Image 1 (cartoon, rainbow, N blue to C red):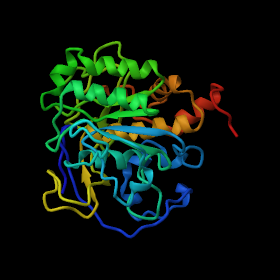
Image 2: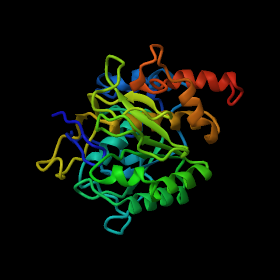
Image 3: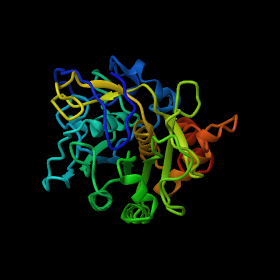
Image 4: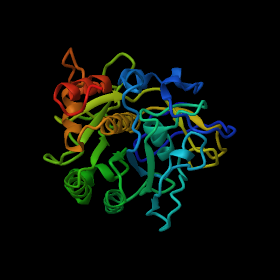
Length: 327
């Protein structure tokens, strides 16, 4: 099944697997579906795992929650919170958050798929309900909570369903992103799926906005474009984890994996790249500029913004600038 999701709605599929210890060597991991993950190669993550895996970095997924029992995710999890039900069990009752989490940091464990930062940790922050809906005040609260509890990177795969207009008006989400940036946390955000020209986040907010690209290296037809801060990453036919139990998007359950499309899928690839850079020693305040300046857009395609993200190029540039050691 394949659908294009507004970041506040979701998609699905899944495989129930036996347990296995996570590998500490993603380069040689035998996860059987990694060759279907074309986005990893498009952003250069697989080429750079020898040097940067996201180890020691915490990626907060502010979304619908995460299936913390999924074989590709359960060893990645750190403490999270459910701001919808008011408890610490950020269970994904929709499906979207689990897909997003796997793109960023699914384990290298010889099962299923691998995330862009396979040794990073996942912090589930449930701010959207089973229908993928939530207030901008709750999202802002989730951003603040993630910062206060040790997140290094925050992923916001948020789109319309009433949120876009309120965010554009400069409410609490923009303010929370600024507080996160001031605290040294890198915030990565989807541009949205309305196929419009414009920007979702207030001008002047230091956020890494991500458009979706397709396999031809062009902007996906559904991707919002036009934000001068934007980079691009694959957002079409993106295979990742989904809950292994019944959810709104998977009322009959799933086998653990499915393919989805949207800027919601592009953003966590970039969040994973950000985690890779931080794990290599790049200072957090340099990450957004480094990713933006090394993105690849040789034909100047407007829909790609500053270009498609390239993790390996960013690492090389970090060495050239003396931000990290070449050893």
